[in-house]
Image 1 (cartoon, rainbow, N blue to C red):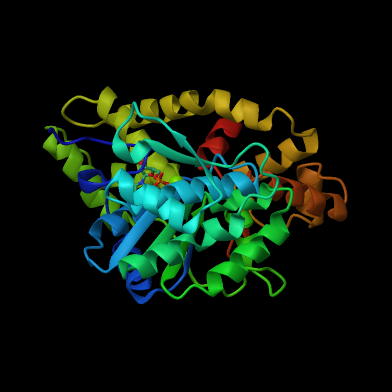
Image 2: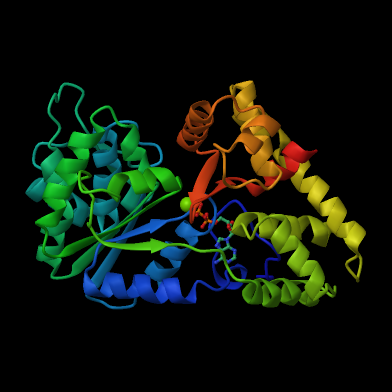
Length: 372
Ligand SMILES: Nc1ncnc2c1ncn2[C@@H]1O[C@H](COP(=O)(O)OP(=O)(O)O)[C@@H](O)[C@H]1O
Ligand SMILES: [Mg+2]
């Protein structure tokens, strides 16, 4: 296999993965110690890549890692279905073992059988249509039962966990999860998801079921030194050269957003000859904005004019003082109460986020687009 150059839009591994050394070590320690964890960062900074890497590198025979993504779950029932299927399949080596576990631990559940595909995909648990009360607790206890039976500890990793804040019964379901999970002796959970403020909403005050549930890892930006080594190494391997200053410009343009760093590098790689020029970088940035224009248009089409003006302020680099007279009058944000309400609405939509009491655009390329 030839080395891949730059990768974006899907989890990375091997030679397209850089840094995350401290976070990997800490998460591996949480896994080994049976500590629950939360991983929080804006979208596409590298949560999924990090968790998958730590799972791959967990070579302790007594620890079984299960990975699942609940992005598609719209209800607590669907959440349990996805979770249950992942636990059943990833804890078994043969279809008989899956069936055994279903019989033993989930007696009431219907099985959908699909003989055409490979053994581990041949069985799918589904709640029966007339099963008004799905056996949620049985499913939630499945990892504990299987861990006991196999004499292992299980780490259940749940990607896009913020989905549960969308369920109609969100709060009571959160309480139920917490109650069941905290009694499990042999299972720990690694919960992560893409909307920072939503993740925080799950555990940031005492009233929340997940308050103090576990170790919280705030993913940071990958530092310049790692990007420099990574990017110059990739260009070099392809017979091209790029300067340190140019790499710094790339990182700063996209505010060190992991996915955009790789995407921008890809365009620059495509556009450049043997020596990367500043024009190549300009063209790469234009391409990056073009590629995202349709997305930004649709994300902003329902915004009010004042919300758009608030975003423009952020694009201009304003990051605090939104109730000050100067900012309000320059960007026509109305009153200070109105300005606070606008900020709240944009936070709610996930278009902006707070970082150390600074208000930032969730998407740095959206800032470039707003400028254009
Ligand atoms: N450790 C890393 N090294 C290099 N690039 C990374 C790394 N983590 C993430 N990326 C970049 O970010 C993109 C999104 O990564 P992903 O793990 O899917 O993020 P998240 O789960 O936070 O949304 C990847 O396709 C890659 O371009
Ligand atoms: Mg992800």
